[in-house]
Length: 377
Image (tube, rainbow, N blue to C red; front, side, top):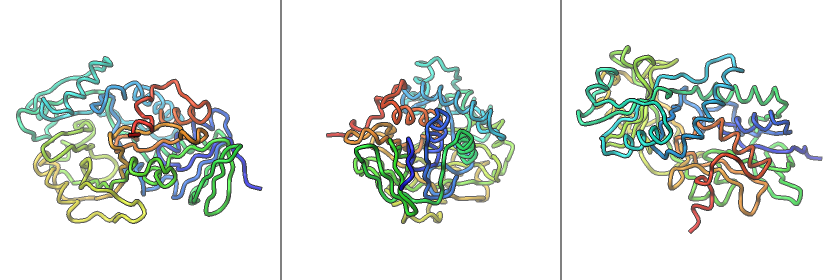
């Protein structure tokens, strides 16, 4: 006889761990299944630091979700033995007529967020790690900073366990099937039944949901940590997290924290798609070249010796907005996918939304822009 649960969560990374914790705290009998370790470094929820910011150039509609996410991160942090959220401020920087600066300022103004605007010279005076064209502008928002993703997952898993959840790592889901009374989930070890299934499988999501094929598409990313030649310029108190729009693309970065090196990366690093089981996880010389050329040009005092290079995964949707929805033909199945390289900061509120959808079929959060049917022709 297989085990029976109220809800099974497939994938216990950033989004899945938050969902398991939220469900367990609501008194739900929940099982979390994770193919790898908890936490692990094969997906999108690792790398020592992840940006969190309220100013949101992507779309001001994200800001209410961010406000809730901040509250939930602070609540989670209060129950954990390590700090999870570090406020350094955040900078969105680029040409004044570019989408990043204009979009960041718009989100601040629409939602009454405190912010400051700097010219390029004012930015360099305040944060001397930068060396940008003189016509560039910056939007500084004081609430920005970074999360420590591995510890965030640990904190959610600890909270889930304390509330009675069952989590099984190193157990790979091989298939799921809808039944008249719920779902059946088959793994390489066992078979489980539940009333509802939540799929938070990251780069593997499309393998479990046919409707995500060609819509939630994995992409290989590489991050660099370079040792600054002027370390004081890249300390957390002197170097807010940033998004930077330059002719070479859009880049993001962090102060030095916990390991040697100024950390940064490029959105859509080298383009293309990736098979998460087959991609080359060892960084290549070309990966380093792309990143080092950027640092040499715009952060010259940060472009010292290479300390570390790491791969991770984005899972991109065509519009780079999330997918948070139930499956039309299977309302007992909820999907959180396609976070497009900017999702981790939302993990707490995504856990709340996915739990709402699994238990009630709806949520009070405004998630119309994240529906799966927006991709229908």
